[in-house]
Image 1 (cartoon, rainbow over the protein chains, first blue to last red):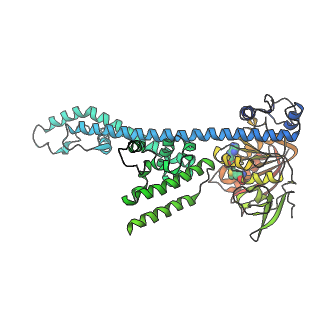
Image 2: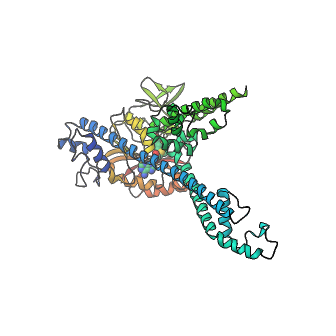
Image 3: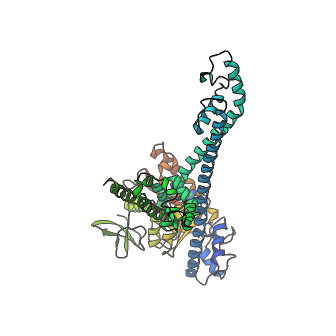
Length: 308
Length: 209
Ligand SMILES: C[S@@+](CC[C@H](N)C(=O)[O-])C[C@H]1O[C@@H](n2cnc3c(N)ncnc32)[C@H](O)[C@@H]1O
């Protein structure tokens, strides 16, 4: 049974023209058979190759092409998934913030010391969940006269839709947190070095701004430095603004934590290392801890300058 | 002492003797002329040879290698063996594996799941040796599923990682269970712990029954 000359399916080369590497790769990827067979001999007999040696050469080219194609496809898919996730996270955060402002403004029209931001919206939402929706503001300080109860009831009524909106804010905020956790887990798989240097979220943003890991790997470090600052860059090119020193990488501690006078140098150094990290991630994918150590070294030296 | 396959030798690197094969370096390992060091700490098969197991390898065999990862071990195998089919299902290490295959015309990468042999049986011919290092749950099942590729007088060289089956359980219990499951399709000829090179790993030599 193991010499497999019986009919369990055809060899990968059955419908392939020996010169057609694409078709050969597709046959390797998509083909099937129940059992192995003496494919080298069968291929020679079928006239696919002149000799067993030639068969192995063709097999090598076909398997390498097939694997390369699949690696590219699967990893390509992974970096695009990451980009979608980080964009969705940003969307959730942005919308949560916008709606939280609306909640605060609306609530502020009936409650004197309504808070602000997502934190306040969460608080409002929790209050409803706790079932205390009518008395929550008993400590408002306006309840000293007889009318207080009626006032509180009325306030609760008018706040009802506000509280409902606050709950949407809370849910969006939860969703953003879940997406962030997802990005933090997957970015190191897609781009281990870039994630180690930039942090997973910034790594994902850079990949997104470039259009993919392969595209980011091809960018010179000067471009990486201003990714995300396109508007400022155009303004500069139209002669209306100074040249931007950094794009999204300004959120990185290496830039933010450096004295403004030295931020340009820090951004340049950081961008250089990030560009290298992206290349390593794209071409080998092997984690190189020395990149992170190098970056730290550079930044420490730059930051030491402004201490002088 | 058991003999090494033709194409594998003990050579000195930086004053220390080590296994070596002849071929293009893979990841900056020490070299001596054409020879490059085969580090048993980074290779279960290297550890099996170091531990003196009777692998039956003589050199020039046709090989099916399951769990090729970035190609560290399979590169050495391709240096001393004949046609070598390297199965790996994760895309990331496969990228490195491709670089290893480039200069080795007898090494054929297959981005496939070793639990689904029907997805590569249209490519792989019957082989003399199946080498397996998949470090995943169900290691005996993977070996049994791939038995169809082994010639009657072929050998299975298997590295069992206890923690892959069950992190919490006593490794010896796990090994017993895996060996028992193997009996369904193989006769186990030899087993040996791969310490000190790999903790909680068992090397197994078996033949199909
Ligand atoms: C311990 S590593 C192998 C190291 C490699 N043998 C070496 O010494 O260079 C285990 C590899 O098996 C792969 N693997 C696990 N399950 C697999 C499966 N079902 N099919 C193919 N590869 C698998 C993993 O992706 C991983 O790369």
